[in-house]
Image (cartoon, rainbow, N blue to C red; front, side, top):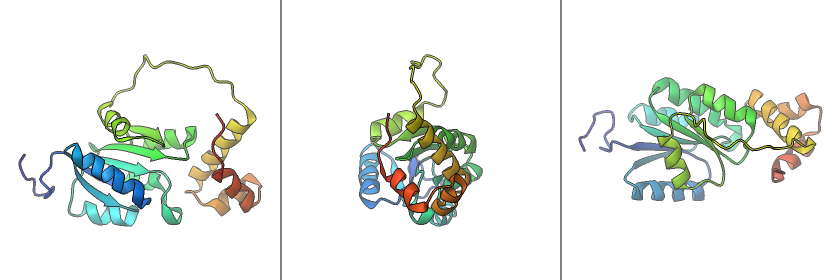
Length: 186
């Protein structure tokens, strides 16, 4: 492997992990290093911007919801604008159709719901094209699923601002927070 001036780590596969959960991030870092990736880590957009001044990652894993109300969608957009060829996978515990669509529009190559492991993420990097043979499942839509998707659509619109989302949905902020803490009903 040759050393690239913009990639001083010297790896052909330089991975940027944008994740604010320390334990999960450490696990991902170790796992990807064992697979031959050089790995960088950031906890938010500000750190991403600093890293991009000296590094050119080839791959990125971005958590959708970052600490202090940060949006992984803003990171995806920034990464894609700086490095259009970068393979970006969005990882989230708050999966919704609205955020999946926005992530792909902003430049992500794939969107995975947590829990996802290193195998899932690495497979997502290699699947650049859609799969027309994917099994279509018939899913009845219940009111809880519709509510969940609407909440996440408005969350994405407001940049994950809980107070503004609650105001737009006409519900109390604590009620919204409780709904977001519950596990999604499938």
